[in-house]
Image 1 (tube, rainbow, N blue to C red):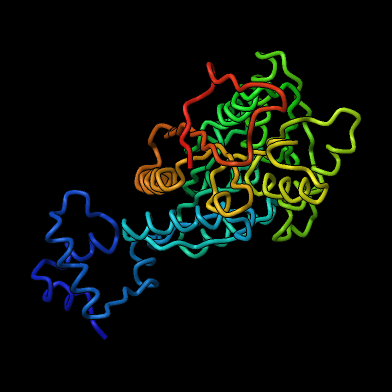
Image 2: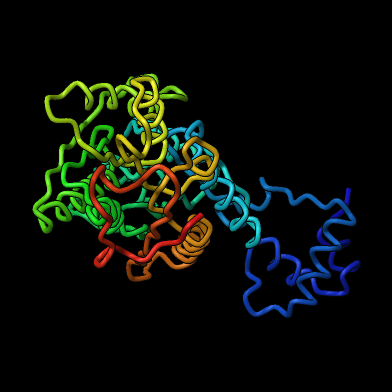
Length: 356
């Protein structure tokens, strides 16, 4: 079995240089030196003794990622980019599903800490995080996605798309197409991103004097793979059963919007002739449904990289000021939206967009 001394000899560097690479301390290292060390590690099949490392440093080169459910494609893509960003800095990733349950989130965080994992990215974006306060006090570095600092006593770093702007951007675009009665479909407001997107949609309708119906669907305790899409499908039936159905609908996320498409098709609605549908998130599936889904996207790769950077910096320096990174959403126009019947679109105040 190869040792760290073997790697150092193979790469022509000191043992401390190899140790710096293994522990992610390569900021000032020349690229050619870093490449030689990594090549030597690969050629020799070197595997660090994690138990020994933990005894020496108190932690292992791993970070945790908590998501509601990897069955949701959004979180699958997020996990991919977080893992890639972590690996670039010499860290592995531990992934777990929390189903938006505070107790489960706390248990996973405790398990991370007990194994020497000192940093975690919270993808669940719960509206309250008091259950993690004791662990943060004990040294857990926590970075939240889609969440700002709130008054629960937990000062944490966060990375987010501007969710309020995303909700407003979606509704502004539909209003520009002539729609004056819009439905906004969401799961229960357990997360900060949902709350902010609904608030943004309401503000846009108030500015334009348009009507917004907010539909909050029920969520099963089992958190099944099709849960969000099924919520959207059922919402489409509910919207059409009203006395005055909305002419356009926004899903708080793309999976709900995909469910809306399915529900409206079941009711023989022509999209976007009879009703327009759009989502928020920009997941890849939106380009493969029929009609393709108009959405408000977010730069997931960039957000993942910044989240990893924040958590590693917090692990190395717990006294850092709070790190905040907010990204702008982007309107992506596809085939599921169109002008309201009998009107011409007015895009004089619509946000900039890309067409796919």
